[in-house]
Length: 257
Ligand code: G3P
Ligand code: CA
Image 1 (cartoon, rainbow, N blue to C red):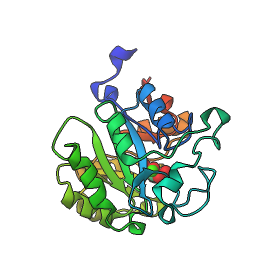
Image 2: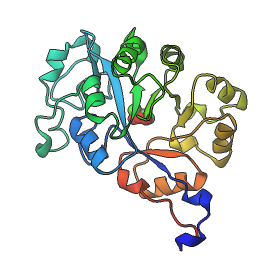
Image 3: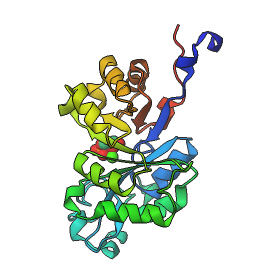
Image 4: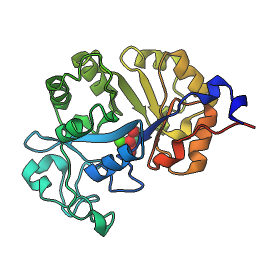
């Protein structure tokens, strides 16, 4: 069967483990990132925010309430306070003791082993976060053109423009929620002046959108697939990659009959 699949259809689908392999381990923990690596994801996706005392950490919500045993806004707690929290038990007792990881720990553990899709989460809450991220990458020589796959993305497009100026050789992405369903070719062309990726909510993806994003010379990695059916639909629409909680849904491009 595979012999009748066209070259185009065999093109590799990029597999992004959302917040790590978050269907299998507590999101944004080393356990989830290791799981994504073990499952052979192309990238792990991480949500980066900043503590009260300026440490970059990986956590999704702007409070620690849902994913740890603590309470409070990320930006109102010190790193020491956040580091004491249990970020695993909420997902399952076998993950008790997982910590909130730092951005730098993640870079050091995974650079060169798996791509890292860095989301700046709510950067408007953390003035200077773009500079801090840039410093961490520069200290590791990850700001130069290299083979270690690093992408920076955000729903905050102004933040991406700032970051692109600091890190002109690092690919950037704009995240686009459902309100961008009617994004115009002109808007895509504007994004393409600083971004290489247009990564939308999967519900707004159509053949036309994929064509327009490609026309603007960007790639498209929609978020967040949580079922095999959703991944298959995105395959059929011709996206370049899929951001998923279930890495195993994106292993193979389906063979068209
Ligand atoms: O990678 C994109 C996706 O993570 C955006 O949504 O809420 O899961 O950060 P969210
Ligand atoms: Ca994210």
